[in-house]
Length: 198
Image (cartoon, rainbow, N blue to C red):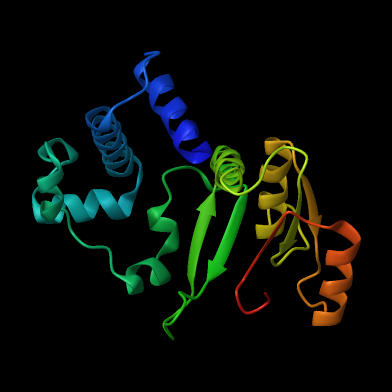
């Protein structure tokens, strides 16, 4: 219920209403956010502007959810070969760059960029997500890659703190015995990590 309540609050803030949103309000909110995203990408990303222009449509042509079929696909090789064409802002506004290879593929690496506002929204979502299984005052043991600001472990830690719980970040390379020792020391309500590490 915590995640649902968080989502309802976001929708209410956007609509300026106090009532609990029903399914149609959620769908209107989703479509509003889709339209805002399409317009923003078209206006600010050289890749998406060219892609839309090439197919002969604009964001204003997406009037209902069925119109998504009009949008051109973005292929993995496009993401990897020209990551800066996807940016919708100055590189000076990028707070974190993350390079990854999609799980289960052997394709080229892709770069993703986040602003500080994006990272703040991720942290808010982390708090809402962890709030599904934890409560304020709980200890949450985190077994994710760490080591720098805005790493996976750091962002989840910030979300845990927003919830009012206490993060216990375990080094990703600890042995199973060391992890178990940390569990006995911190007595976490939740252990969060990659399944391979768990």
